[in-house]
Length: 412
Image (cartoon, rainbow, N blue to C red; front, side):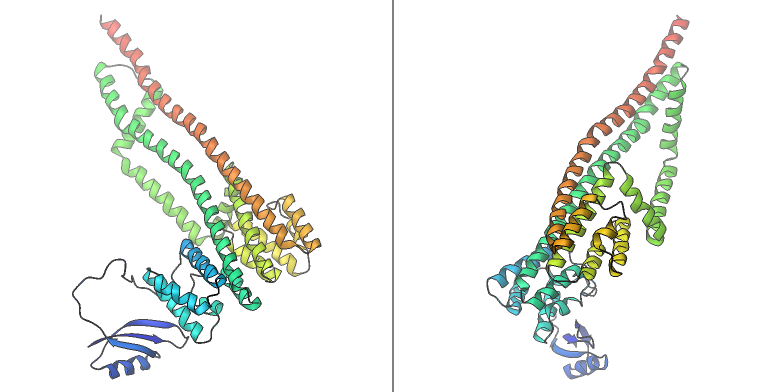
């Protein structure tokens, strides 16, 4: 017989699965030998009907699953609204479980709710899952300590929403230039792979003498048509090489992070978005009562650019030995003078969180402007590039015509 079971392991983590045994008692005994405490066990129903794809569990440990940012934002927002309405934490969680359609997320929330019944705090229960970032866990833990869990969920929602908006703008800014580059490459392939070979046959049949530019493009066209696999091989080698270096070499990752900051139009977006994320999270954490050192460490980990993150680490090291934040930041050019000045004002007035919040708003506004500048600049730049590519090919095709006319005149 096959039995479905729900059990807890030695680390108080919920496990679900199926087991083959002759009797239910034997199934319980087998599970106990594996160190599992059975909470529920039932005989598996035999059914030939396929499960809906939306209800299928794709397997894997739910404790290591990544939770999408949008799902986290919806979870925090709903919890904040229900707790502000006076609904207690456990009932709020049960309401979300009943309304959740995603199988994995429902399992996660069920385990969280069971741990709440077993005496765990919500932040302790969430730490069993890698899908909940430390930033949110620290805010929720602080909310539990000061009795304002509803405000903690609101702060988590704000951070999540701002982070999603910022990431979306960056992706949008980077995708447009990438699209134009792909367009240019496609244009070159079409012109050199399909158009030029036709003209080559025409000019060859007429016996015209081809100029150097045309010969060069014809040679490139021949290579593209007849030896296309070489181009594919080079592209694959470059992509795999960059991926391998990025994965295995810390020096390469740091070099690339610095290189991104130096690219015109792109560098300001990367730097401003990194500082905006740092200031936003740091502001929320300090206002929640989390110590400066811990707040800075968590905000540092949320920054994606490794060079900016490394500079923040140097600042944190100085702060831990008694240096003020503004003094430590003034040693690194990645931090704007206005940021250093505002943090100094915040430290001296005791309103560091407010100063960081204003700087987060400023950097987000600057990031929006930089994205718009990049978009505005890429259109004329790529228009010129496309014009040069097309113009070069057209000139290369027209120039041999003068040679054709000379051959025709000589023959007549």
